Length: 400
Ligand SMILES: Cc1cc2nc3c(=O)[nH]c(=O)nc-3n(C[C@H](O)[C@H](O)[C@H](O)COP(=O)(O)OP(=O)(O)OC[C@H]3O[C@@H](n4cnc5c(N)ncnc54)[C@H](O)[C@@H]3O)c2cc1C
Image 1: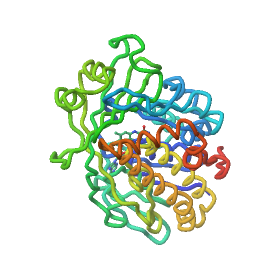
Image 2: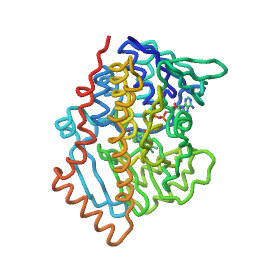
Image 3: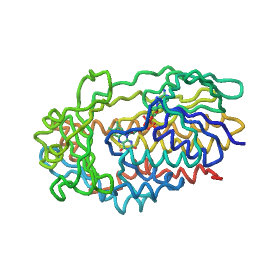
Image 4: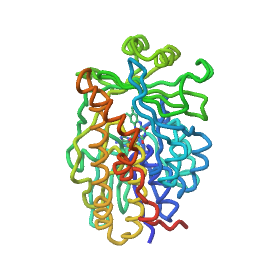
């Protein structure tokens, strides 16, 4: 039996869900409140837990052709440039987890997913905000732009400010975490040759850090420069940032960071928000995935990857329990909620490690990173839980 599925939000989570549902024989209507799809400059890291699903959906080669594969992940002290940690990624990630670790520009990933969804006849409605829903005896309905849509199930993939979540459990306002991030892109050809190592590069400082890596086959360097600000005073959570403020904030940094930021000509400032981990995502024939269910601080670069896992596992359970949707959604939540909450916690722990202040705490930071470099197996326990989930084989989906 094929299902009629309503999905609110055509971000990475909503599109991945729409593809896997449509490819396995369901009919999907996808609503997004935006007038058009556009994405300001930002990179995104895709670890093996996301890449295994892209491979199962048959889009991994396209994604790889638009990406950059880092050689290692490295951490430096922001002021002294001393290397604090290094771990191989090129061979090691695929060797251990079966898939590559890639850097991609978000719009390249989004476009690939969108084209694939269109190929499988996902019905996409723009300028269509989902505000609320009604659970009925046999399904769910929602009114959008004055028109009623009915489905067997409604999925809130509508991001951190989810309206579906607000209707479902009243959790509306995300908390400002005390961190904000400047994000930008710099053309590689404008930088001195080999200035930026071919790695996932992290510089850690007092109450600030910066991550940078190549995207678009190495043609651009993407950066995220995070600082602590007590308050987020703006109405909007994403603004065009001030280049001079950003450069000033990093003016005493490793020379490579300063040269990178000097060559950036447009940056955006994001307030970083979250909500406390939820213990329920589901109400009757409605559930949440991605940031709507578990927004996380970006310090493990896992938000989108976990959203992609949600989409796969939800498809598995909707197909398996298509005659008992409530049970299917319950099984989905049981499978996904604990891991999402764990990664939310890990991401928060990294926020503390990355921003330690001088003196004893910084000494502790350097010791932790140096021990982790010498004994990589110490980290495997943690990272196996994140990257090593065999979601595709544990939750099979039959494509038609
Ligand atoms: C600085 C930063 C760096 C990051 N880096 C990484 C990284 O390297 N790797 C990684 O995996 N993750 C990263 N993340 C996290 C990642 O961006 C998110 O987890 C991911 O985008 C969530 O996808 P989503 O589809 O759930 O939500 P979103 O991408 O927010 O998409 C939600 C969609 O829903 C639509 N929408 C919203 N409300 C409604 C409504 N009421 N009705 C209809 N449509 C609606 C929106 O227009 C949007 O298209 C980072 C985040 C930040 C802030």
